[in-house]
Image: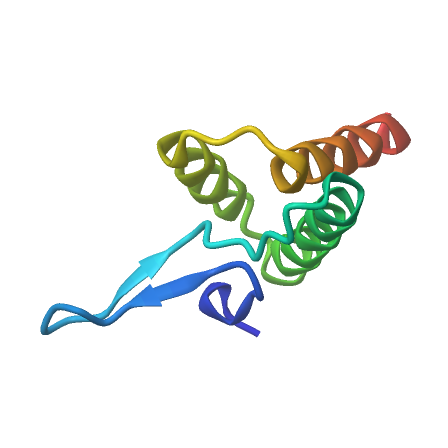
Length: 90
């Protein structure tokens, strides 16, 4: 699996060279469901980071989240799953 294969990563093909969009989540508008989706997104990312021994994937996603300017259920679920993973690792 590659970074661009993650379910929340998009591809902008409007220019001559496609551009990876690190944070293109699907949103339902339902807070609880979006939190679940965000948690799933973090699990996907975590699995890829471990498989490829590449922590920089997280920075790409977090930067894209900040640039997107939204703090909603998907981002909250993502960050909560990340926090829980860090707490278990300690």
